[in-house]
Image (cartoon, rainbow, N blue to C red; front, side, top):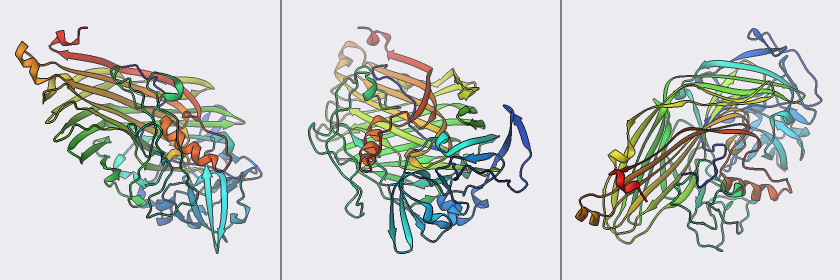
Length: 530
């Protein structure tokens, strides 16, 4: 199941945000939490803020930054201490922010500057357009060290996923990729639905996505079994339409429906029912009293940037599918266009814990009337330790402790042909600043790839029907962001409109990929032999 090289998770999934000021001045903040010594500097111990404690503007657009003793901004950064109140809207692709043109510091916003309006509205200014008393500001990616000259923050607390705020960007580039689109066809990676205006969008043909293990082809958290060696080609995006922010809600992407989960675990339920194909799957990271520790220490460069997470108990996964009528199959990658954000307060730089998710689904149904279903549960022990400590990379993950339910043993189905269902799931937790694809900070991704295969009913004549399942679980860590290559392709096409250099799929510093569990089981065992 290592056909594809694994890279830092997408997935992913997610929760948080931050950023900065101009002229490099440092100003004392009002009395705040007691500091703690760390690395020779005073680090403020931050606390999370329940969504109900935020103002309406902060809930919608993020918490504004401030000047304080723990932060010194880079000269090119425009810090808006009342940024949340200045923002009027965020575009449906999550990239353009509409601000009050008369707000303090709005007149300073120019291309190539770095804007820090809130923990979510932060990035390099790609374009500014005045529209009456409003400014439309399009932001691109930015690294933490481009925002902060100096920053010291530590944070520890229990995580309560039920207090997360969900933010939606239905037109986010790279949300949906059809991997079976005909080669050479036009890929509308950035095309907005006809019901929306999007003057900056463009379309074009894009390179093939390969599955032979080469770096340029590796979409994080989209790992397949060795049997899946097909070279897919042109990509295309179709987009959902949902509310801008608020509570958890179902998301429709193309013809897929996703039901995010937050309570008792973090994950998603996926459903598809069209053209005679039914596919349902779920992937849930189980949580047991989750705790998070993080530290960020910047002083003329990155010194410390790490996240420790305990209480990730394991993975529950279920998958079922079948068809009626003509033989058709699914083959797609979906980066869920939603951030689950858990704001942290207590310092002037409004970080958040952000949870992001990505999914790859596939079916190999070879005959009419096929049906198969399976479920599994795998438990972990141990904590996640990931990031940079004293300028050295650190990456340790949980260990597999038990298989509660085995996919192969629960696999059931029937068909005159051999059939398979495939699911890859990426869940990413970032502690950082920014929104959607441009959330930047130390991150941990927990990824899973499962494949189930059911033999033909015709095998019954020899006394048995073969069932098999492959499971890969691993962890990816780094500092920056991590995205599927197909999403990176879409984002780079967008950035090219502004003549901005391309980003890589591991913007900043990917650190390591750590295996948690690899398993393959066939029933009866003779089915797994060559």
